[in-house]
Each structure stands twice: as C-alpha cells, then as structure tokens.
Amino acid sequence: MEDNIKVPRHVSIIMDGNGRWAKARGQRREFGHIEGVESVRSVTKEAVRQGVKYLSLFTFSEENWGRPAEEVEALMGLMMKAIHREVPMFTENGVRFLVLGNKERLSAQMQEAIRSLEELTAANDRMTMILFLSYSGKWDILQAAKKMAADMAAHPDMDPEIADFDKYLVTAGIPDPDLVIRTSGEQRISNYLLWQSAYSEYLFTDTLWPDFKAENFVQALKEYSGRDRRYGKVK
Image 1 (cartoon, helix red, strand yellow):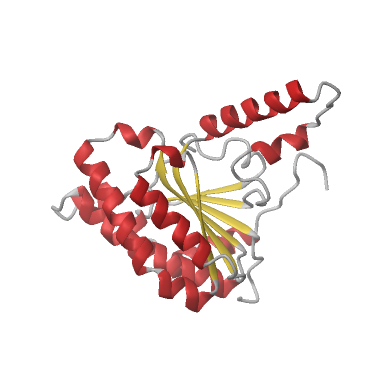
Image 2 (image 1 turned 90 degrees about the vertical axis):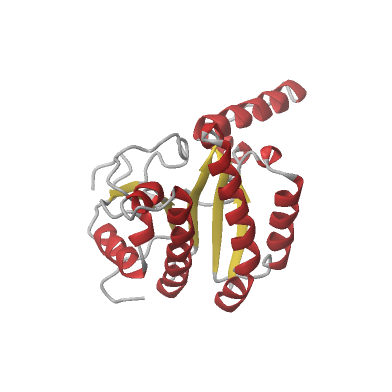
C-alpha cells in the first residue's frame, strides 16, 4: 500500500471497451476479450498488493445473452479457460474466488467449473474476487423481493427494516462497493449493483479495459483518496 492512498475496502469495476479495442486494431471482438483477461490478472494482483479486501468485476450481464450467439459462445469458452488457468494466481496471492448472478442460465459444465474453483479457494483470505456473471441489478432486486415476500408470508409477524433487504440480495454478507470504476469513456451504470452502489463513489475513465492495468488501478485509488464521502450527511 502506498502512503498517499486511502484504500477502499471494496472496489468494483465495469469492464468496458474490449470490442472497441479489438476493432481499432482490425481484430475480431474476441481478441479484445482475450486481452481483457490480462487486465484482470494485472488489476487483481495490484488490488491484493494495495490491501483491497473485495474486488468485483462486472463480467457478463443478463442483457449480454442477447449478443450474437458466436460472441457469447466465445466469451463463455474464454471464461472457462481463464477459470482453470488462474488457479495458481489465486493460490499465490491468497485470493478467494466467487461468482454471483443468475447462474441457472449457465451451462452445467460452467457451473461445475465455478463450484470447483470456489471450493478450492474458499480458505484464501487476503482478498475476495467476485465475478458478476449473468447478472443485472433489476434481476437481483426482483429475486430478493420475492424471497423477502415469501419469508413475510411464512412469518406474518415479521416487521422488516430497509437494512434487512440486503440479506436477500446475491451479495448478502459482502460490503457494498466503496468505489465503482467504469472504463471506456461511457458514463452510465448499465443496470449494475443498483441497490448496493447507492452511496458508492463512481470513477469514469476513457481508458479501454484491455489497456487498464495496475498503474491505472493505482491512479483510480489515488483519485478516490481525494473524495469526501458524506453519505447524505453534513460533515
């Protein structure tokens, strides 16, 4: 950890720009996704070094299922390879691996690969890396509301507080992100962590994800360090 950096507990990243990065080089979109994996590795190692406890990455949204089948198949294949290949990196850096989202939409093979790596890294305690896969904020809130309604129907005397809703979200037990970074110059949240990021600091950068490496991550942490978080209150 650098002395001039106030390290957030949880950093979340909307990884954007893989396709544009590849197109600018006359390559297929898949080429950008492949290079994007290198950025994931670089940022993960730096996050551990800086003392970040949770690093979450928006990997594939519920809406992304509407992309061309060829691209979706290539993305899933790439993720399968990356899951297997990154085992040594997770072990060496003490990283716990976790996937959150509507996993029922994933293939049985993908679900098994995820379960295997989650079990293998469960005892790692330096940092938790979360992939949000087949995820959308609206879906998360809807499934949480259904679970909460079922509990209330089963327990008529239940008098829930707003804070109680957190335990029904897929992120139950995980702190809300302090900092959300979006790459590629787009300035929107794209249906991501709608409930959890209510008081997150947002940082938008023009850098395309395949070009976003450890040094860019450190610069983002430095900018976050200068933010004054008030949570709607007056200091």
